[in-house]
Length: 227
Image 1 (cartoon, one colour):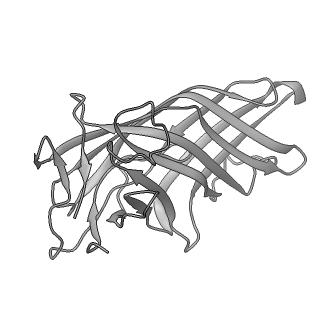
Image 2 (image 1 turned 45 degrees about the vertical axis):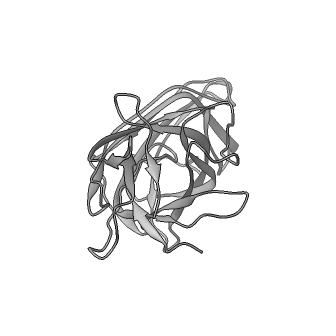
Image 3 (image 1 turned 90 degrees about the vertical axis):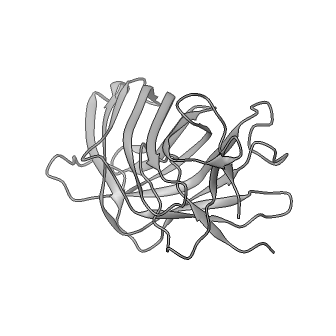
């Protein structure tokens, strides 16, 4: 198996997070056009981003956002970076209302990505460190058919990191083969409710995140994850 290596890149879950911190011994792993890449990376959703959880006295709440964009700054050797922009829009829920999801206190740092190709699967994975006290995702959920609004804050409070699978554009196992770019995928990864006086009684204790994203530079160039 190739030697594991790390890189920096954004991806989502519930609206927000990421960036890599690597040791000096690791080789360059982020490139674009055959050259080391330093700068911004933009993740945009390929399919709707979904967040779901069971709220006390409410039941299953599922939020679906039609548009998600995350922007992170990276350096070619993966030694530092930050998530500096998060936008989720077109968000509705299964109770007939609209939702607003906001990342509080950007930029976020803390995490790593590993090049560890799996035959017939991903090229590597992104891990968001946990616990991570900087992460604060605010969700305002208008549950129209129930006549109530829930305000909830989510982060990473457990010791279990959030993991996102990463795929290069040439990988035939990438989540959406009709999209010819590098991709990231969230599959049921968890965010936990964090303490905040704005939290209301119907907030789920945790929310699972699902979504597929393409990863490009702001100018539309592809990035490659490698050893």
